[in-house]
Amino acid sequence: MRAGPQFAMPSRSRRRWSGSQVASRWGPTWASEAAVGSSRKRCPARPWRQWAKGISLTQTAPTPEALGPLAWLGTALVLIGVAFEGTADFQLARFKAVASNAGKVLDTGLWRYSRHPNYFGEIVIWIGIAIIALPSLQGWSFITLISPVFVAVLITQISGVPLLEKFADKKWGGQKAYEEYKRSTPVLIPKLPFM
Image 1 (cartoon, rainbow, N blue to C red):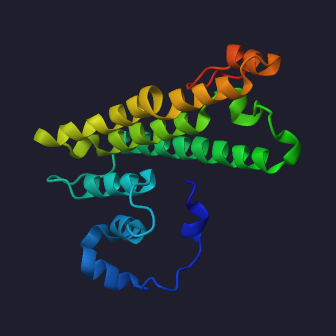
Image 2 (cartoon, helix red, strand yellow):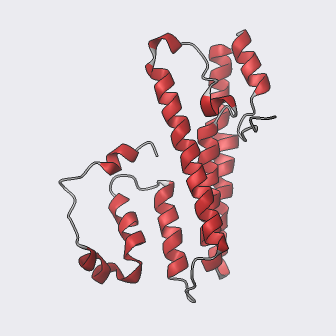
Protein backbone atom coordinates (compact mmCIF):
# COMPACT_ATOMS: atom_id res chain seq x y z
CA MET A 1 0.00 0.00 0.00
CA ARG A 2 2.81 2.38 0.83
CA ALA A 3 4.26 1.84 -2.65
CA GLY A 4 0.90 2.46 -4.35
CA PRO A 5 1.85 5.73 -6.07
CA GLN A 6 4.86 4.01 -7.65
CA PHE A 7 2.62 1.41 -9.26
CA ALA A 8 0.31 4.07 -10.68
CA MET A 9 3.16 5.82 -12.48
CA PRO A 10 4.08 4.45 -15.91
CA SER A 11 7.48 2.88 -16.17
CA ARG A 12 9.67 3.45 -19.23
CA SER A 13 11.79 0.41 -18.50
CA ARG A 14 8.86 -2.02 -18.41
CA ARG A 15 7.94 -3.75 -21.66
CA ARG A 16 4.42 -3.05 -22.85
CA TRP A 17 2.36 -6.14 -23.70
CA SER A 18 -0.88 -6.24 -25.62
CA GLY A 19 -3.71 -8.30 -24.18
CA SER A 20 -3.33 -11.02 -26.82
CA GLN A 21 0.42 -11.31 -26.19
CA VAL A 22 -0.20 -11.68 -22.46
CA ALA A 23 -3.01 -14.20 -23.01
CA SER A 24 -0.88 -16.32 -25.34
CA ARG A 25 1.98 -16.32 -22.85
CA TRP A 26 -0.01 -16.90 -19.64
CA GLY A 27 -3.22 -18.51 -20.78
CA PRO A 28 -6.77 -17.84 -19.57
CA THR A 29 -5.75 -16.44 -16.18
CA TRP A 30 -3.55 -13.79 -17.74
CA ALA A 31 -5.11 -10.87 -15.85
CA SER A 32 -4.08 -12.09 -12.41
CA GLU A 33 -0.73 -13.35 -13.71
CA ALA A 34 -0.06 -9.98 -15.33
CA ALA A 35 -0.78 -8.25 -12.04
CA VAL A 36 1.53 -10.64 -10.21
CA GLY A 37 4.30 -10.53 -12.80
CA SER A 38 4.40 -6.75 -13.17
CA SER A 39 5.02 -6.29 -9.45
CA ARG A 40 7.90 -8.73 -8.98
CA LYS A 41 10.76 -6.29 -9.57
CA ARG A 42 9.30 -3.41 -7.63
CA CYS A 43 7.54 -4.91 -4.64
CA PRO A 44 8.05 -8.66 -4.26
CA ALA A 45 6.04 -9.33 -1.10
CA ARG A 46 3.04 -7.01 -1.12
CA PRO A 47 -0.26 -8.58 -0.09
CA TRP A 48 -2.19 -7.48 -3.19
CA ARG A 49 0.15 -9.62 -5.27
CA GLN A 50 -0.67 -12.58 -3.08
CA TRP A 51 -4.36 -11.74 -3.39
CA ALA A 52 -4.05 -11.80 -7.19
CA LYS A 53 -2.24 -15.13 -6.91
CA GLY A 54 -5.07 -16.47 -4.72
CA ILE A 55 -7.63 -15.50 -7.35
CA SER A 56 -5.41 -17.17 -9.95
CA LEU A 57 -5.27 -20.34 -7.86
CA THR A 58 -9.04 -20.49 -7.63
CA GLN A 59 -9.23 -20.23 -11.42
CA THR A 60 -6.55 -22.86 -12.10
CA ALA A 61 -7.55 -25.38 -9.42
CA PRO A 62 -7.76 -29.04 -10.53
CA THR A 63 -11.54 -28.63 -10.78
CA PRO A 64 -12.05 -24.99 -11.75
CA GLU A 65 -15.29 -23.51 -10.51
CA ALA A 66 -16.83 -20.09 -10.58
CA LEU A 67 -15.76 -17.82 -7.77
CA GLY A 68 -17.79 -18.95 -4.80
CA PRO A 69 -18.83 -17.28 -1.56
CA LEU A 70 -15.41 -17.82 0.05
CA ALA A 71 -13.68 -15.96 -2.78
CA TRP A 72 -16.10 -13.06 -2.42
CA LEU A 73 -15.75 -13.04 1.38
CA GLY A 74 -11.96 -13.13 1.07
CA THR A 75 -12.00 -10.35 -1.50
CA ALA A 76 -14.17 -8.22 0.78
CA LEU A 77 -11.71 -8.79 3.64
CA VAL A 78 -8.76 -7.92 1.40
CA LEU A 79 -10.47 -4.68 0.33
CA ILE A 80 -11.34 -3.80 3.93
CA GLY A 81 -7.76 -4.52 4.99
CA VAL A 82 -6.30 -2.44 2.16
CA ALA A 83 -8.67 0.40 3.02
CA PHE A 84 -7.67 0.25 6.69
CA GLU A 85 -3.94 0.03 6.06
CA GLY A 86 -3.94 2.67 3.34
CA THR A 87 -6.13 5.11 5.23
CA ALA A 88 -4.14 4.68 8.44
CA ASP A 89 -0.83 5.20 6.62
CA PHE A 90 -2.23 8.27 4.85
CA GLN A 91 -3.53 9.75 8.10
CA LEU A 92 -0.20 9.11 9.83
CA ALA A 93 1.81 10.69 7.00
CA ARG A 94 -0.50 13.72 6.93
CA PHE A 95 -0.22 14.07 10.73
CA LYS A 96 3.58 13.86 10.67
CA ALA A 97 3.78 16.44 7.87
CA VAL A 98 2.38 19.16 10.16
CA ALA A 99 5.21 20.68 12.19
CA SER A 100 2.93 21.62 15.11
CA ASN A 101 2.14 17.91 15.64
CA ALA A 102 5.73 17.11 16.65
CA GLY A 103 5.69 15.30 19.99
CA LYS A 104 1.94 14.71 19.87
CA VAL A 105 0.02 11.45 19.66
CA LEU A 106 -2.20 10.80 16.64
CA ASP A 107 -5.61 10.08 18.15
CA THR A 108 -7.97 11.06 15.34
CA GLY A 109 -9.34 9.20 12.31
CA LEU A 110 -8.79 5.46 12.43
CA TRP A 111 -6.18 6.01 15.14
CA ARG A 112 -9.04 6.97 17.46
CA TYR A 113 -10.37 3.40 17.24
CA SER A 114 -7.09 1.45 17.28
CA ARG A 115 -3.51 2.28 18.24
CA HIS A 116 -2.28 0.27 15.24
CA PRO A 117 -4.99 0.34 12.53
CA ASN A 118 -2.42 -0.18 9.77
CA TYR A 119 -1.32 -3.48 11.33
CA PHE A 120 -4.94 -4.49 11.80
CA GLY A 121 -5.45 -3.89 8.07
CA GLU A 122 -2.38 -5.96 7.20
CA ILE A 123 -3.63 -8.92 9.23
CA VAL A 124 -7.10 -8.67 7.67
CA ILE A 125 -5.53 -8.68 4.19
CA TRP A 126 -3.69 -11.94 4.91
CA ILE A 127 -6.81 -13.55 6.37
CA GLY A 128 -8.70 -12.55 3.22
CA ILE A 129 -5.99 -14.03 1.01
CA ALA A 130 -6.17 -17.32 2.91
CA ILE A 131 -9.96 -17.43 2.57
CA ILE A 132 -9.72 -16.76 -1.19
CA ALA A 133 -7.23 -19.61 -1.62
CA LEU A 134 -9.11 -22.04 0.65
CA PRO A 135 -11.30 -23.73 -2.00
CA SER A 136 -8.28 -24.59 -4.14
CA LEU A 137 -6.21 -26.11 -1.34
CA GLN A 138 -5.74 -29.85 -1.06
CA GLY A 139 -3.30 -32.16 0.64
CA TRP A 140 -0.10 -30.48 1.77
CA SER A 141 -1.16 -27.13 0.32
CA PHE A 142 -3.25 -26.58 3.48
CA ILE A 143 0.05 -25.77 5.20
CA THR A 144 -0.13 -22.38 3.47
CA LEU A 145 -2.90 -21.42 5.89
CA ILE A 146 -0.15 -20.79 8.40
CA SER A 147 0.65 -17.54 6.54
CA PRO A 148 -2.01 -15.35 8.20
CA VAL A 149 -1.19 -16.90 11.58
CA PHE A 150 2.51 -16.20 11.04
CA VAL A 151 1.81 -12.59 10.01
CA ALA A 152 -0.48 -12.04 13.01
CA VAL A 153 2.05 -13.51 15.46
CA LEU A 154 4.89 -11.55 13.89
CA ILE A 155 2.98 -8.26 14.04
CA THR A 156 1.40 -8.72 17.47
CA GLN A 157 4.11 -10.59 19.37
CA ILE A 158 7.51 -10.07 17.77
CA SER A 159 8.12 -7.01 15.65
CA GLY A 160 5.33 -4.52 14.91
CA VAL A 161 3.13 -3.79 17.89
CA PRO A 162 5.55 -4.63 20.74
CA LEU A 163 8.33 -2.45 19.32
CA LEU A 164 6.05 0.51 18.62
CA GLU A 165 4.33 0.23 22.00
CA LYS A 166 7.72 0.23 23.71
CA PHE A 167 8.82 3.24 21.64
CA ALA A 168 5.56 5.12 22.40
CA ASP A 169 5.84 4.40 26.13
CA LYS A 170 9.39 5.72 26.11
CA LYS A 171 8.50 8.83 24.10
CA TRP A 172 5.11 9.78 25.57
CA GLY A 173 4.86 7.73 28.77
CA GLY A 174 3.65 9.81 31.69
CA GLN A 175 1.94 12.42 29.50
CA LYS A 176 -1.71 12.72 30.46
CA ALA A 177 -3.01 12.75 26.86
CA TYR A 178 -1.02 9.65 25.91
CA GLU A 179 -1.97 7.70 29.03
CA GLU A 180 -5.66 8.48 28.40
CA TYR A 181 -5.31 7.47 24.73
CA LYS A 182 -3.60 4.24 25.74
CA ARG A 183 -6.25 3.49 28.36
CA SER A 184 -9.23 4.16 26.06
CA THR A 185 -7.97 2.84 22.70
CA PRO A 186 -7.51 -0.87 21.90
CA VAL A 187 -4.05 -1.93 20.77
CA LEU A 188 -5.06 -3.63 17.53
CA ILE A 189 -8.70 -4.57 16.92
CA PRO A 190 -10.62 -1.32 16.48
CA LYS A 191 -13.41 -0.49 18.88
CA LEU A 192 -16.68 0.37 17.28
CA PRO A 193 -17.55 4.09 17.33
CA PHE A 194 -20.63 3.52 19.51
CA MET A 195 -18.72 1.57 22.18
